[in-house]
Image (cartoon, rainbow, N blue to C red; front, top):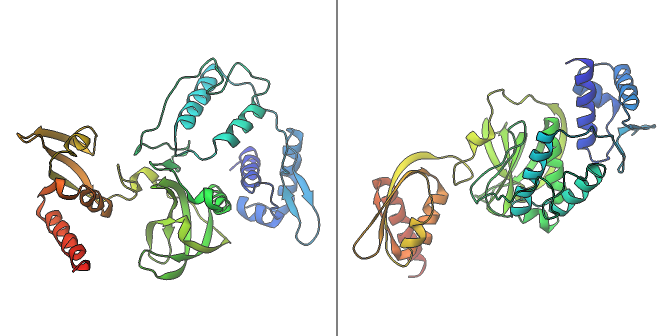
Length: 336
């Protein structure tokens, strides 16, 4: 990476720490240069109008203090439209948690560009838009993805956990976590966080797990303890977070052709939504509907079918029929 690229990378690292200190030795290690070059990069950033504070002492380093003002070049017409449309989508979406913070930030950045406008303020380029549950939005590098639901764990005092994991994703920094799994087991493992996903009222980190040797999803609410490691990693060039997020579920599953008979009063509810690919519906004489659709075979699929109660009957595939039957028998056993 050239000098300009290193300066920008150093800026990204400092901004990701949200005003926290970063040691010069760490910056030198991250950028694979000497500490003298890091000091030189700081001078370059200062000449560009970006103030980087130097804190001396044993625990010193560099930081970009809160309230730092960086001059923003004028936006092009296409950029104005893109920002306005994106903000409109965020304002209309229940999955976006930082609406007010973002509004305040954008108002400060765009104080000298009032022609942009903001959603709800009659901006020149404002258009109404919305994310539907199950749809996704990704960042410019394709590593961030949002999928239906309103995450609650950030609203219950875990905001700093999200911010720290987000910083680890940006900086490509490994984490050691103490994790409480679905099976009530507590394990300690090292992960390489690739991205964050909002799903079913919670935030998940999609990461490579060194313990299991594969990419897995970790629910932030189940992370009991974590620490940043000095180890940094490179995200595989072919990694795309969308390949690890199902169309209607958090993780992908095997594709199956679901044949589902749904009787009133839930028939209309099922027929009015898109549940997967190649969907077909056929009305029956009793007002019910036969749903035929390609879906991913995941635990969420089983839960959805059970939530329909006696109104739903699986006609195929046989393996799914057996699992539904076994689950119902196990439930019935609890009440005997």
